Image (cartoon, rainbow, N blue to C red):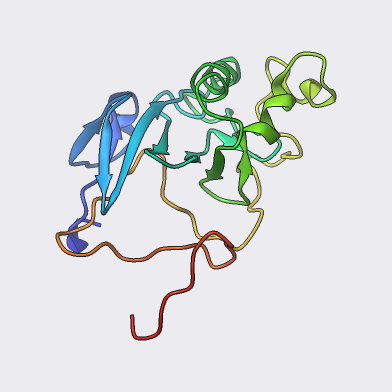
Amino acid sequence: MRDAGYSVGVTAEDAADLPAYDEVIEHDTVIEVGRLRLRTIHTPGHTPGSMCFRVEGKPLLFSGDTLFPGGPGATKFPGGDFATIIESIERRLFASLDADTIVMPGHGTDTTIAAERPGLDNGSPAAGNHRAGDATAPGDPSPQGPPPRGPRPAPGRPRRVARPPAGPAPRRCPAASARCPPVPPGR
C-alpha cells in the first residue's frame, strides 16, 4: 500500500498485530479519504482495537468485522471477546446512529441499524443467538468468521486506513450497488 502512496493506520490496541504501520488511529477522530470524512468509532470485541468508520454527513457506516447482517462478527480469535463486541454494538452503534444508517461490513451484504437492532434486544427471537460465550455470528459455525455473503469488494479493513495520494479521488462503488449513480460517458 505504501508503494501506491497510501498510509497504514492501526489502533494502539492492535498495533502489535501488524509488522509495520504509519500512524495510530484513535476513537472519535476524523480521517479524510479523498473527499470523504470518516469519523472513527472504537468498537472492541472482534479484536481489542476494532474500529468502525462513519461517513460524516451521510447515513453510512463501514463496520469492518464488528457488525454483519444477523449479528456481531466472530470473537474467537486472540483478543476477541463476545461480551465486549455486544457492548460496543449497543453503546457505540445502536445508541448513537440513526435507524436508517446503512451498515457495510468488511465482507458480505449491506444491512441497516434498524434491521440489526432487534436481534440484540432482549426477548427477541434472535436474542438467543447472542448469549454470553458465543464466539460466532448467527449461522457461522466456521472458525474463519462469517462466510462472504456476496460479490461486493471489501471497503477496507477496520484497522487499516488508506489515504489516497494527492489528486482526484478514484470512484469506487460496489458493482451491485444501486446507490452509485452511473458515470457519464467520457469519464
